[in-house]
Length: 251
Image (tube, rainbow, N blue to C red; front, side, top):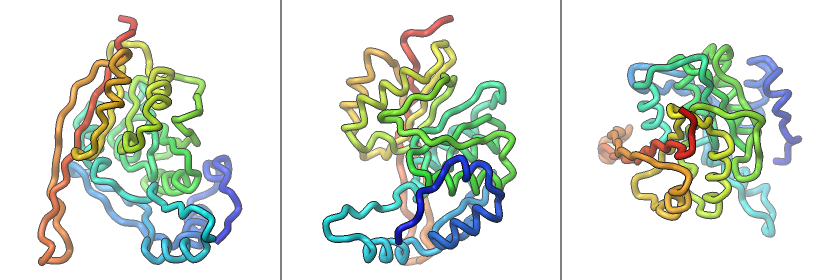
């Protein structure tokens, strides 16, 4: 299952049909409608994720680590963060950066709502899905993609709003993530970072490290997801959304 590395330049410049054909040949894909807060987007998904993982496992040698495509999953926290963004008043003159975006669900909904968004991830395959989502939903005037690893990369600009869903699951990322946020948040009183995580995930160390640079507020949101099988009933998802404000800012 070896494939040539994807170029983000090619992803950004290629047409919709070419991108979709490439994604289907490589992964097997379909569009799923996702509705949040009365707004609906067509989101690219694996047609059969289990089958793809089986093929991936067969092609992975024993001494190699199996790299699962976690970037392709629609996480419940992304749905709840998107819901919060849809309640905000967008300002197209102030650009938002989504970090660790995966397929970019939050960024796509923010762009549909009226924000100007850069959707970033360190996996070119994730940006392939995000770009197809941008084109499928006619969001190319308000959304762009960028290859960014927030643990080591730096961009050449700052943003008034940074968002991230499930970027706090790995403790080794905490220090570089805080440095990234410091480097890229605008030093203004209305600038903010919004981070969403599963309610059960502990991240006390992150906030201890962040305390010298950021103040924050938090809120817990939840929703019930009805399974397609009656015997499984409803599953409740809870997440915590933190809004961080830089302590050092200009008026």
